[in-house]
Amino acid sequence: MTATQITTRLADEDIPEFKPDIMVKLLATIDAQQRPNLVLIVSLEAKDNETLMFAEFIHGKTKKNVELNPKCTAAFMNLGYDYWVVKGDFTHWAYEGTDFEYYNEKPLFKNNAYLGITRVGYISIKQVIPKRKIKMKRPLLRLLKNYMKEQKETETNEDKLPSFVKKIFRAPSNLKYIAFVDKDGYPLIIPTLHLIPTETNQLIFTPSAFKQDFTNLSPGMMVAAFALNIEELLMYQIKGTYRGFQSYQDTDVGCINIEEIYCCMPPKAGDRISF
Image (cartoon, rainbow, N blue to C red):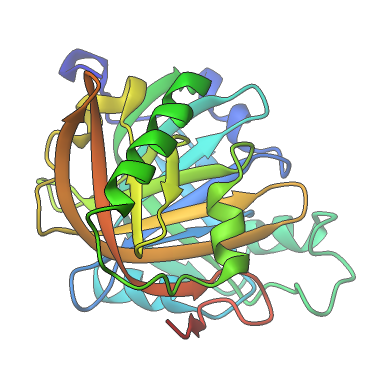
């Protein structure tokens, strides 16, 4: 990622790329404690070159966060593993109008009392990081597992991570992301497929091709990690403190101390899981 690639508006060809319902659409916000929060927002899409919009159909922390702090970031990934990041400012809600009717007519929401929308939110685009490709590297996953085995001998933390959460974060086929508040005050979402939980209440990961995105992540910062089984729509969020990178077999390995776990699925979306 270089500064010359970044733009302040979406390219015309990107607008239709964000419309399909069958793609991963994430929104990162900042809570009252200045911590990142990362969730799946299936209604998120581009209204035009300068605006994103999304429909609210589940009340949760995300909507409260954007009202407290308008700085937020969206990430889009299609079935071909093409990936975009868009930073922007939440501006307002609409309770009626063309966009409200547009969402109500979409198959996902139409004639569905549980998913009926209540309002439409708008985000003014400030920065666009153009399309990049996400690639999984199996050797890196083997490296992390070897690293985990060695660290287990020195760490003394008791393993308390629930097995059902551990399963979602460990599966190599599941999608995983990390979010933190960047130096510009906006959250940044980074795909982190090479991320697994240890037996000592930690997450370890390698930055892979997105190493430069982690430049402003410093030890002691709070991060949010999100894992998604896209076939079964099982998803959880883990929050914790970033401990830093260390070199292992010529590869950077990052570590996060797990502190909080949240369910990201209705009807209990946003509920904290005992840990």
